[in-house]
Amino acid sequence: MKTPNLRTQLVLASGLVWVYSLGVGASYWRQSRAHARLETAFHQGLTVLSSLPRLRDELRRVDQNGDQYLLSGQPSWLERREEALDQVHALLRELDGAASDERDRATIAEADRRLTAYLAERSPWISRRRAGRLAPADAARATRRARELDAVAEPLNELKNVNVADLRARRLEAEEAARGALWLILLAGAAAAAFVAVLLSRALIGPVASLRENARGWTLGKPWDFPPPRGAGPEVRDLHETMGEMATRLNAQFEREAELGRLKGSLVSMASHEFNNALSVLGTTVNLLKQTESAPPAGRRADYYVIVETNLRALSLATRNLLDLGLLESGRFAVRPHRADLGRVLAGAAKALQPIYERKGLRFTLELPAGTPAAKADPEALVMVATNLVGNAVKYTPEGGEVAAGVSVEPDGRLRVYVADTGIGIAPGDREAILSGHRTEEGRMAAPGFGVGLMLVKKILDAHGTALEIEGAPGKGSRFSFVLPAWDESADAMLLA
Image 1 (cartoon, rainbow, N blue to C red):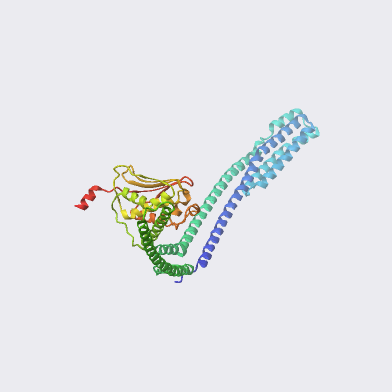
Image 2: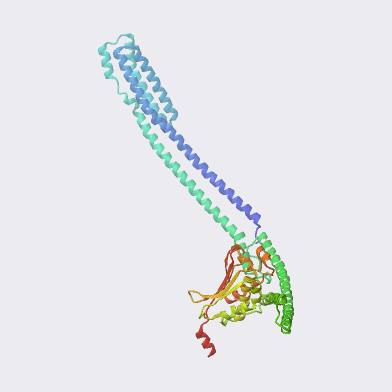
């Protein structure tokens, strides 16, 4: 079965959302109807409940004003009776308008019938009083013989009870409708969410997760031979093919870069060898010139020899760095840790650079505590590390400054090798950059160079399983250090046995 594209599936999902919206709207309409009925019933019940006490009061006024008229004969009492009677009729009409069913209307009609009977009973007495034919004794007897007025309002008590019960029933109906609407919304939402989740999982999430795993499993230089994800739509399949094309282009670029890297390594190695040979010849020639002098060089002639030897050593160090860096990058340089005398390593580096720091007038201090143990490291590789660190300190320390190199024992027994200076310093934000071969603006202004020395130091220390730590601040000097494990003398004895 052909998998529909994402647009079709999104249309289906949108349709489901519309259906869900209609369901929510229907539920809301149903609940609104129930609330409207409840509100109507509430207003009707409130009208009934608020009218009944007023109706009773007006009926009592009708009765009391009629009795006063029968006893006194004053027309004002009769006028008040008529006003109260008008209020009674108005309240009965209001109750009839608020009645919710025929039963309520029948109850109101019964109350009206009893009121009519009451008025009919009282009417002859009032007529006799108006004609002046009612004696006081008869008037008193008429007031005592009047039927109980509560009989008129008695049917309305049932109306009150019915309205209270009706309100309770409508409230329960509204609550039931609200619960039904809530359940309908929840069930419809859960069904819609489940459908959309399954749809997205099958059409998008699953295939994209499969693509992600393929991308993680792919290695630069290897072909993109992963099959398309199962159940993927046309868009995801197109994305899979595009990733394959991208992998092919990256592999081609990788091959070109690798070829250029090999060519660059070969050129650097060849040039470094040639420079090294030429510098060796120049160094030997300078020594022969000094030895063939009839007397030790002095004055400006001696200064010339120092300048030549200093620059030869600097060029030799730079050439050796390029050569060793090429070996490291090509994988032909390997460290072989064994017993290393750190004092001898640092002393050798200081001696090799002595003409340079003496020419700048720097004070060099070698700090080696008595009894410093040997380290477990590659001595030849450490010579390159120490020479570069001391050479950098000398290079970036102004004339008249100080450089110190030494070893200290850490609390855990490891040995910390350090080189400190009073030079230009390094900002914290530049420390990572200088370990990658980049040079700071201050460094370029202070001294020439390529910036490969610290990169070579980092690679050698990485091979030893340790890291180069940098401290200091601009204008306040720098301190480079790293730690090495101490050599286990018992292990040394076992090797020699």
